[in-house]
Amino acid sequence: MHELGIVFHIIRTVEDACRDNAILRVSSVTLQLGEVSGVVPHYLEDAWRWASNKNPLVAGSELKVEEIPAVTYCEDCKKTYETVAHGKTCPHCGSSRTYLVQGQEVMVKEIETPDEQLSRDDVDKEYVDGVSPLGQGAMREASPDPVDAANPLIIE
Image (cartoon, rainbow, N blue to C red):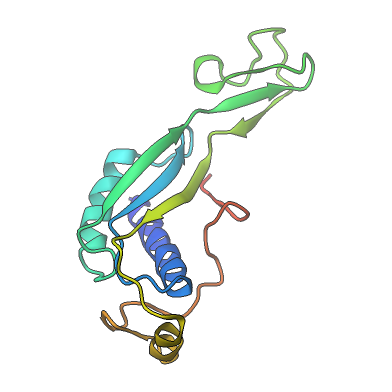
């Protein structure tokens, strides 16, 4: 089940964002999930419940999943269409010169938090040694691979 690995990646991304923004707790995370990403939402939500409860920053938080519909573009007739309904062959002209333009995304869209924040000085002081106010190791050093709008996690 690769959903657990994806959840760990999401939690690392949330930790990074929280450290950068002096956030102590997360109440929910909204994830954009492409229709043909290969990620099973039910498994992802189960993995989230298990993994998030092991991390004080996101314990008890909700994972909200927004499905992004799969859309394919036809290079011959220049039209788009629903990928799942029609596959690789364009329903408008019958061409197979098509490519997916959206629908594979796995991207953190939003992190909701209660109104608990530290000052920037507290964050800088607390996270220097990788220790958060929530406990040793609750937050880790910055990840070299955060998921954001400019660098989405693509699962193929």
